[in-house]
Length: 138
Image 1 (cartoon, rainbow, N blue to C red):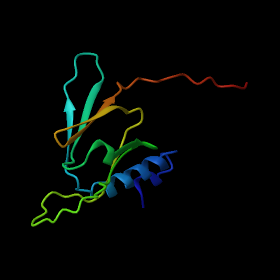
Image 2 (cartoon, rainbow, N blue to C red; image 1 turned 45 degrees about the vertical axis):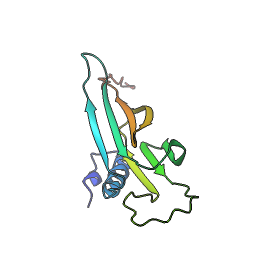
Image 3 (cartoon, rainbow, N blue to C red; image 1 turned 30 degrees about the vertical axis):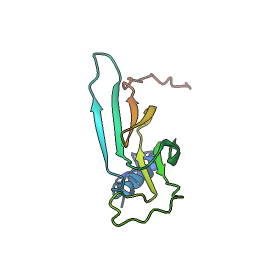
């Protein structure tokens, strides 16, 4: 029985699917990441930053997309070298990380510097959207 099965919660099927996706993506641990809340000035929208440790990946090995309230980050290295490793401690396996975004969350940009992929997000200020519904009839 789901919390969203109440007859008073109408149209929340998509939220339940997003929560299920978030639960599945929380098991992902590679590559490691930080999520930072950036300080915002008075009246400005709040900003967030996701930083992933992607040592050994170039920007051509990485792909960032936003699809149906999800931020998807994929990495795949094209290893063409014939290196003979004595020890391989830097992971180079492909990865797929997914973050569920709130309605209206905007991805502002991404940068790769010193093996860290930083993705800037902006959270819009919530707006009070109350309106009066006119009743037709007698």
